[in-house]
Image (cartoon, rainbow, N blue to C red; front, side, top):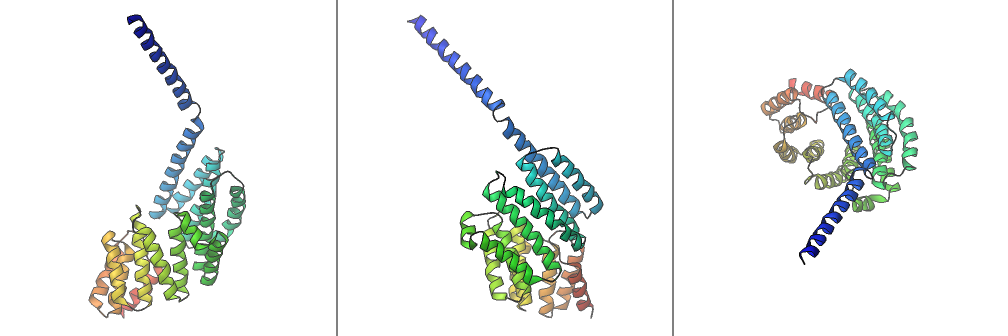
Length: 302
């Protein structure tokens, strides 16, 4: 009996060792491609984060050199992930030109983005990733039209994107992270076109999508977008309410500026000047356009 127990225990140990060996094989060799892909994703994320840090610090020359090195890094790695990242490198470049107000350089990039999009559509990437890549192109195109005061064109490209991808209901059913950006950008265009009621509807959608987001910046910006709507509507009391909600999340240059603008509309000049001064000194994004700041500064000095 004792001998049988020893044999049984030995057999179990052997099976465990064999099983462990097989598990080790599958862990170390079969998923190697997956592990390499995860490492590549990590390295790409580091590149992207460092690049946008340079932009935020307005170190544009350094950012340009960094972007070139990023593309060299991607060209040395052939995969669907590197293809997608190379495509997004053009959006990264667009952000550089956008911040430098060199919008014509953005225009040159769009044909290259279109070419890469065709390759991405034929790749084995998931539908969600392909759709997000398409939106990146539309978002950049919207910014280009927006800065050229072609707000109707900006609105049309967003509407076409929504329509060709199944409409709002389908996009909402897919629960895509980009839906917040789609609604926020659409609201932005409607605001510029003076469609205040429609604009409000899409800001409300953006707020609902961002309120529980881990990225509090989205919620902050959506609240300030609503404040901007009510400033344009000349309803400073409501604008103050939304600005205060955003300001409680964190203090940004834009939130200070919207306080100043709301107090100006209420003819509370001391408060308006105080918050304008705080806005000028604040470096925390989101910001307000330099032209808007200058124009508002002139109003306060009159």
